[in-house]
Image (tube, rainbow, N blue to C red; front, top):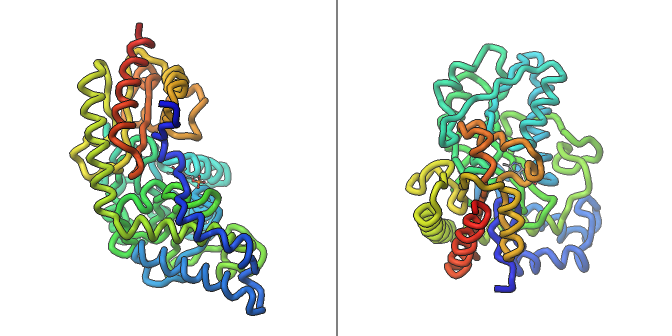
Length: 384
Ligand SMILES: Cc1ncc(COP(=O)(O)O)c(C=O)c1O
């Protein structure tokens, strides 16, 4: 095989031709600034309004004006945490999150700690699940925000979001979820799931990079994070990224039309791969919830191969045309073991041979077999 076998869809995804086609006119013919008054800008304005409706519909928001376009997941996470913390500091200074969040959350929490906030990092069990009773016990009368990710980017665990939101609301606390890995991969309904703030990023669901959104319930309007002009109802300044926003809407729409079929096909291929890898490669652990558990992202697989260096594994797979990851793209290259693997109880030695494979609807059985066969021989060579 000479082509690239892409098994890193949790890091980013391809932009589909129909998504690109939807975006193209907004670079060339319809380049008007949506904030301008003349009618030439009307098309751009309408395009972003329509996308706002589309996204609101997909996540079950009550109103489309609860969707704010941003430059991606990291910005949305920063906005949710910093604006909630500083905006509610008269009420309290305590935030609850988990040990397995993405660095967009963890490093923002570290910043807030330096600025006088206290953060509780909840432990997770050996499959990555947060305990609801630990959450209840962590809440104090100074707690102003709970932020728990919807689905983990390394081991695919889908957290009990609805129950977490229910606890938060019972105690009068705002609930934010980082849904960057979940959006368009699992069903989300912000109202049923008691979500006040939600972060998402287009490039994780076949949209373009550098664009995302934040859902902000109209009952908890946060201060802007980016100050400037009056775009996004004066809550997120900056000329709108019209092509990016249109691409995100087009990508979200095409996935959401065929949700269940797509995810059951991906899950079936993922389970086939996991079964073969676990049967054919000895001394391997499969991390996160079991394949039969619906509380796992459809396309996610995570393994640790005993006695193998994860970095060497990735290099050798790359030489065979396979794109994979050791886990979080942001942690790759760092010598510390992944904080997620540490949190689920893997020691440094076990975490060394980590490999995340994340497949998509485009992954074929032929590619899956090629990856498994290559993995078998590469692991054998590295162990030898
Ligand atoms: C769970 C999670 N949150 C946040 C981010 C950051 O999103 P973005 O790349 O759009 O800034 C990522 C990206 O990998 C992620 O997986």
